[in-house]
Length: 188
Ligand SMILES: [Fe+2]
Image (tube, rainbow, N blue to C red; front, side, top):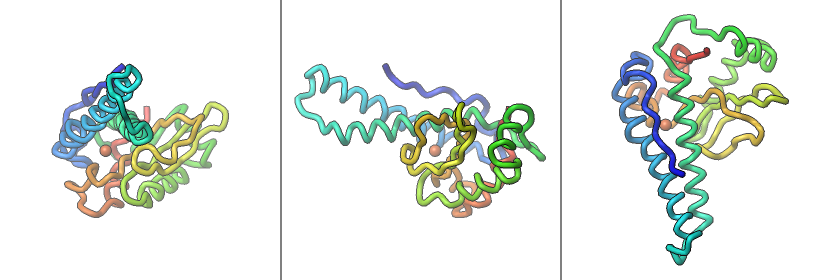
């Protein structure tokens, strides 16, 4: 089994001016591609170790590496496919709107919490909206790509707040990036 990088579901410049083509190209083709390569490299090492082709392996470090790269890959896959060309008054409708209202009270209450989560991530990480069939929706901040996930919950919306996601466009103003990002969320 090997992981594969999916092509972006739109052109590099599709999210402008919220996210530039330059960032999209680097982010997808270099950063995301590196997570896919890292996940596959860790898998290969583990396979060789299992088969006896690699006499010695730091299994603990390799598994940590696998966790980081697999989570990085999966969160980026989700990130790309839940964005679209920017629009004003971009708010959820239908089923997702109902679920948000049920779990958070209102869309604006959810938006306030999710934005604050994204802006307060220490260092590199994500704001993630999760869903559990039993318990509804939950917002968590994820450190790096793989720390703080909630077992039993599926990520359904994720905002990358690593510097590689916004620095070329927004410099150190992560808040402006987070505020602008709401215009490109693909709610459907
Ligand atoms: Fe990223």
